[in-house]
Image (tube, rainbow, N blue to C red):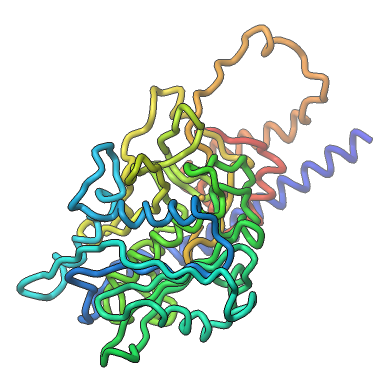
Length: 413
C-alpha cells in the first residue's frame, strides 16, 4: 500500500514537471510575440459618441420596481453635473473615458454628457420569451433614436440568442427609421437563473476555474448587480467605439474595447479568480468599488486607460495592514464571461488569522506526505525562479494548474 502511494505521488510530480516544461516553452513563444506586439489601443478614426446623450431603458419581461431602480440610479450616477459626494464614485470611474476623447485625432476633442432618458416597460413579453438578435434590435428601435443610447434589458426568464453561450450582452448600431443616421443600442440579460456563474461573477460561484465563495452583491440582487457590471462595460465600449471604427484592439468583429480589455479586474491585485482589493460595507458585508446616486453602491469594471496603456481601477491601495495583504492561491474564484461573453472575477481581502502555536505543535490525524515527494517539490521550487513558477498559475492553462494543486495544495503570496 505504501509503495503504491509513493508511486502515485511520484507520477504526479513527474507529470507536473513535464507539463511545466511544455507550458514554459509555449509561454516563451507567447511572451516573444507579446514583446513584439504589445497591447496598444488603436484609434480607427471613426466618430465617438459626443454631446448630450440620453440613455433610454427598455425593460423586457418581469422586473420589480426595486430592480429597475438599481439600474436607473446607476445611470444617474454617471453624470458629473451632480457628483456623488462619497468617493470613490461611479462618476469618477466614468471620467476615464474622457481620455479617449482627449487622445482622438481631432483639434477640438468633443465631450460627452450622459443623462437618464425615458423608460419603456414591456411586461407582457410582446415578442415571446425566446428572442433572436433581430428581435433585440427590434426592441431597441422602440426608444428615441436621436442623440440616444437605447438599452434593452431582458428578465431572467427570457432566452436570447447566444446568451450564456458566447455573451452576456452586446452593443451595436442601427439605422434609425425616423432619422437618417445611425443610433446605438445595448442589450444586457439577467443571468440569475440561467448562467450567473458566467455573467454575474463575482456575485455567484464561477462555472469553471478556481472556486471560492461569491461576494455579497451591493444591492442584494445577484442578477441585477451582475447586469450593472455588464451594462457598465458595454456603455464604455459603446461611447468609445460606437460604430465599429473608434477605439479598439484586435479584429473588428471581436474587438477588445475599453472594459473588455480588462476582464475580471475590479481592484488592485486582481488575478483570475480574485476580483481585486475592494471596499466592504460593514453593515451588509457587500463588496463594491464605487458609490452612486441615492446612496447606492456598485461594482464597476476596470477601464483600459489609453494614456498609460494599463487597466485603471478606482481602488488603488490595499485595505489594512500587511496581514490583510496575504492571499493564497488554491481554490479561489474563477473566470466568468462578463459583458457580452467578453468578460470574467472574488473574495475581498480578509484579515489573515494568526497561527496558533499550540495547534501547530499538535500532530495531524491525517498522514504526512511522503518525505521523498516533499523533498522533490522543495528542490523544484528552489531551482525554478519565481517568475517562471507563475506559469503554473496561468489562467489560460488550467491543466497544469490542476496538477499543481494535486501536489502543492495552497501557495500563499
